[in-house]
Amino acid sequence: MSSEIKDIGLAPGGRLKIAWVKEHCDLLRTLEKEFSETKPFAGKKVALSVHLEAKTAYLCLVLAAGGAEMYVTGSNPLSTQDDVAAALVDAGLEVHAKYGCSEEEYYNHIRAVLSPGPNIIIDDGGDLVHMMHTELKDLIPGVIGGCEETTTGIIRLEAMNREGKLGFPMVKVNNAQCKHFFDNRYGTGQSVWDGINRTTNLIVAGKTVVVAGYGWCGKGVAMRAKGLGAQVIVTEIDPVKAIEAVMDGFSVMPMKEAAKYGDFFVTVTGCDKVIDEEDFMEMKDGAILCNAGHFDCEIDMAGLRKICGEGKPLRHNITGYTLPNGKTLAVLGEGRLVNLACGDGHPAEIMDMSFAIQALSAKYLIEHGSELKEKLIDVPEEVDRDVAVKKLSFLGVEIDTLTPEQEAYLNNSNV
Image: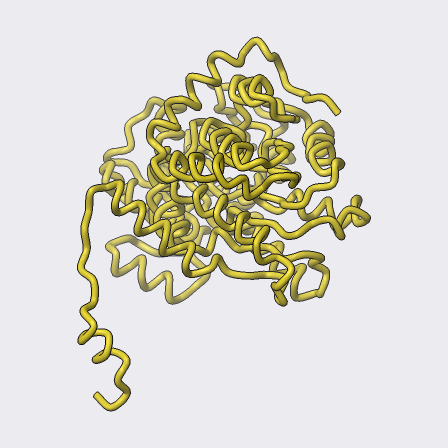
């Protein structure tokens, strides 16, 4: 099957983006060199669905350097960059992805990268795994295992695993320390505001930002909003995280109350209808809404369209919805991931760690997949630690190590 992209003529621009990313991804460059020599993925088919921009493209090229036969699509129609997709096709990979594709096209792309019968799956949000277990069950025996990039995908996997429906091992890449500590907190924190600021061209200082959810991503978004000079309100359902937000210096209240005060709203929960019809009616005229969770349901877009109609464009990637009370709300990126629909996603140095974990976890599956008893597994500790040690080295940072006497002390139960 041939690739399906917008225009192969866009490849030169995509190559420039990938080259820039490569220059700032020390870990992936090291793995590319290692994989080129050892070919750990030789003879293996890899189906990948991750936000298709330059950092993802470089991960694909690293896996291809290791011998993988790559089948690539994007995990969100508004995050696919057509020039990057073209650059991958020009490099010999099979790609099925277009910016702004319809829902039908999106699922056709998912189907196209799975149809060759993958041995390894690299997923972001769970759509590849879901289709494998519904439409393409006959391909499951050929799958050694897969890796899941994000919280939303792991939530879906955990539900499948509880019901005994997961047909092959999946590595919870998102839960690795070098992923959620840095990618979710610092990566999301910076890239969300990159997307908001470049799209709105409005000041944040002196305004009120409502952050829905205080997990690792929410912590990062709130921290960066505070750094930009905003007053920050956090909404939560977890009492422990709510206390943490209070002790970090933020106001905490229910969304129904916070809706009255926010100038910016950012949802970061992985849940459904976090901002609903009642909340919309409480908001200020001109309030700006965006989502940093995986799916476009955290802001109830269906509910908003039901009471307002389809809305009207206010600026590129901003749609205005006029409520029955006459107030207008501005939604960024159609309620999809604002850092990717309205920006370039996480910084390259951050994704260097996350994608190194993806690549090494895929390699671990190739080497140990037949030995795994559980269907849902953590990133091996040695992978997490190896990434951290190498990243410190690239940062030019040294740390202490235990002496033999200190190790004996810590391991002595009689102390």
